[in-house]
Length: 235
Image 1 (cartoon, rainbow, N blue to C red):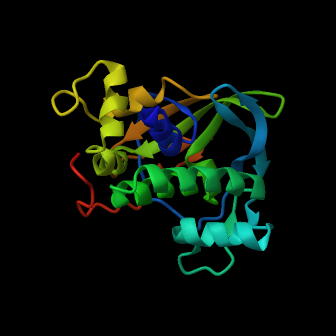
Image 2: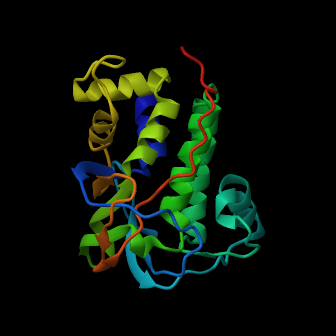
């Protein structure tokens, strides 16, 4: 079951179907934008399902404890900003905190993987420019059924590489039928993430310096702030 927890921590309980796309601009952490996802509107056997929203990012209005969680776990959101505009709600932060605790414990042998996974989670939920990398494809009332998620492929590949040596990752990749260390790669990583999840996300992977259109406007595919210093046990 460890590989399932890896899945939950890395993909935020989302189904990812890998697709190519014409992408990407550099990530904009503090851009003025629109929030597409916030809060929790559903639950199934695979996890929680977010709400579809259409609002401007706001100053985080949460308890001191939840603010502390954000500052500790998502410092990149506060890069040069004391009180940033965000899309995540306190409910989101509480859900994130549970995942953060899990990955910090389960993947302690791989600090880079832990940090990069947290960056993935923080950006997906909280970045002020969600409208530039997320599209709502289908929803039932306010509950999200399917979205498009635009990701910088080199950046996601580095995230994958920082976790690749974990036994949990090796077991996770075997779900696709590839042979870890031989034939497995980033496409298998993304494919494996589609095997369990509460709603569907179509992941559009794109190269550096390519351009995308998201929600009818120029977009910014997610480019993670990757730490990759070889801090990972080999077994």
